[in-house]
Image (tube, rainbow, N blue to C red; front, side, top):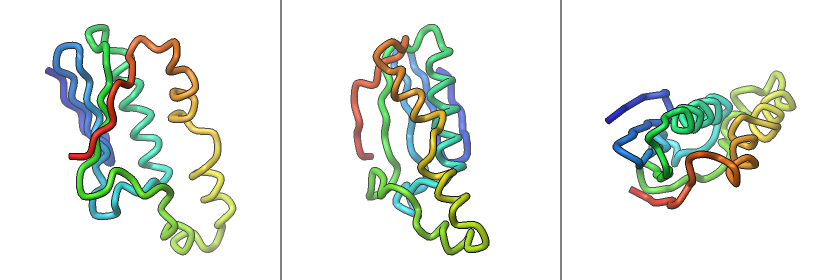
Length: 113
């Protein structure tokens, strides 16, 4: 069994099952740029594990994810356009999603905890 804590994301690989848990429950797993980077790193780690064959994506707390964290715009008021680009622009997560059809690890289930 392999465990990893990427900050906003927890990863556990047990046999052929990789489980990635979104772990920002206090903000309903809302997305910020660091969260997306951590999620991309977790997916990359699962793909790199030769034993992992399926990926279960879970979320801690009451909400799977509320989407982008709009509070970040007020926290980045000096440059809201840059924050928006970081939040919705091309990301490693988007690239991974687009490559999913050919990935060695398949996303098979989304679940709330």
